[in-house]
Structures are given as C-alpha cells and as structure tokens.
Image 1 (cartoon, rainbow, N blue to C red):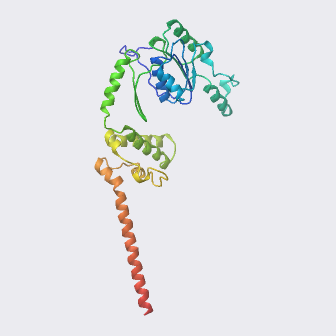
Image 2 (image 1 turned 180 degrees about the vertical axis):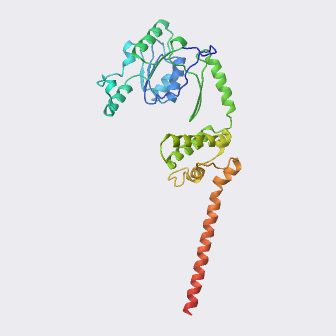
Image 3 (image 1 turned 120 degrees about the horizontal axis):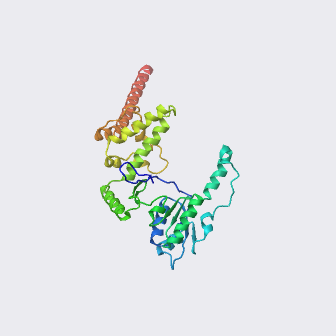
Amino acid sequence: MTDTPNGVKGSLLLAWQVRDKHCLVIGAGDVALSRINHLILAQAKITVVTGETKEPHPSILKLNSEGRIHNFVQRNYENNDLIMYESTKPTVNFRNITPKDFSEISSLSNETFACVCCCIDDYELSTKIYYQCKLLRLPVNIADKPPLCDFYFGSMFNRDNLQIMISTNGKSPRLSKMIKDNIAKEFDGVDLNNAIENLGMIRSRLRQLILIDDDLVTIDTRMNWIKTLTDFFTLKQWSELQLVPETLLEPPHDNRFMYVDRIIKYFPDYPPQNYETFKSTIFESEIEEDKEDDEDDDKEGQVKEVETSLENLSIE
C-alpha cells in the first residue's frame, strides 16, 4: 500500500455489488456471524464452511434454518472449497470477445466467489488460504490480520437506501463503532430514506422528461441542476416532504409524479429556494387548479343558461 503525502495509509471505499453473487465465509464463530450479517444486507449468496469448531454460533444456525444462507457446510475447510461452484471452462479468448459471448462470460463470473472471508483461529491455515486466494485471484479478508486483507469490514450505518461505512483501515474496529453510534445520534428524528426517495424520484423523473439528448452538455446540465436543487434545503427539510400524494400511495398511482413534475417544470430554471414558498408552490397549486376548474365549470354553466334563455326568447 502506497503512503499518502502525509504518511497515512488509506483505502479505497467502495459500494461493492455482490447481490446474487457467491461469497464464501470460512468459520462459524462471532466474527463469521458479523461477516454473514454484512453479506445478508448486501443480498449475497452466502456459502459457509464452518471449519474446526465444536458448535457453530447459534445465530448462524438460526440464519441457516431461515434460509438466509445459500449453502451451509459443517466440516473442516478443504482446498477445493474455493472453486466449489466452478464447473465451466472458458472457451472465449478475452482479446476477441463479441456481444454474443457476454452471456457465457456472465455465467463464468457467477461461478466464481466474489469474495472470501476467513474467520478461523488457525494462523497457519488462514495464511495458506490467503495465498490460495491470491493464486486464484479471489479477493480475500483474513480476520484480525490486516496485512492479509484485500478489503476491510468497517462499521456500517444502515437506513434502507442510505449506507455509511466507517473504517480505521483495520486499526481500531471498536473506534469505528463509536463513530458510527455518534453519526446515528445526529440523524435521530430524520427520515433519511424519505429524503433519498424524494431526491431519487426527482432525478429519475428528470431523466425521463428532459431527455433532449444524451450528449455530455445535456448530461452535465441535468447533473448540475439536481445538485443545485439538492443544496436548496437541509436533509431534515427534504425528509419532511411528501412528494407522492397520500391518496395515491397504493396502486394505480394515477398521479404519482404530480408534485415531482411541478418541480421539474422549472427546468432549466429552479423552483423557489425559500422552503415555505417552495412547498406552497408545489403542493398548494393543486388547490388553485381545483379553483380554476370550478370557475371554468361555473362559467360554462352561466353560458348554457344564457344560451337557453335566448332560445326561449326566439321561440316566443
């Protein structure tokens, strides 16, 4: 690992997509349970090889009984465990791939472990597993041995769509947890997921409605617009907005995007930056529209009355 200019070693923090991908956990104690819980949140297909243990952790047994673990193997580790799902030999040369090869390549990658987590107390065996993974080019984490880790499990703060990872580069997991708990306190009383859903709807709807072109200028304009709009209000303010009409939370969602579309109509300009004015513009305009509709109905009624009176006069 290369030192940064100030001498501090850093890591590349990523949101690693392992959904529906095979992940291997070797061990069945407290640390293995922690790794399994992380992988469950990531919706991975988890294989557990318990290794030398008198009895797997009760919570791991419970997760297995609930069907949360894809494959539970209660025995010592064997060398072939690292390739247990590999059954297809590649027939494609990576230099000459074409679109028709993509399906085969996807199948091959799904047979390989996306990551390996070794959580056993046997230092000699865990070191061997690390180098086996290196030979097979599998990302591996050897618990409590930072030099033998391609990645670390930091302390995670999860609120549905929001994930925050705190890492000390493997130096102090306990401190990571303390920092996570402090962050959690900062968000007490804030519906983070609703804030994310609101801004996510605006962003996706903007792409649907304002798809003038997918050139770099248009993309840049859209990105800058949504970034500026996001900065208009605080996290708490965004979390308090109900951008899906309450009466339409269930299907058929006829006017699901009614409020969101009113925001996007301002593009490339912006809606009011004052929060109260913004709310009245987006939500109360519905009342104004209803008033206008009523007024139009009244006018139509009055016109019909005049027309009827004229007809009666002409008859007389």
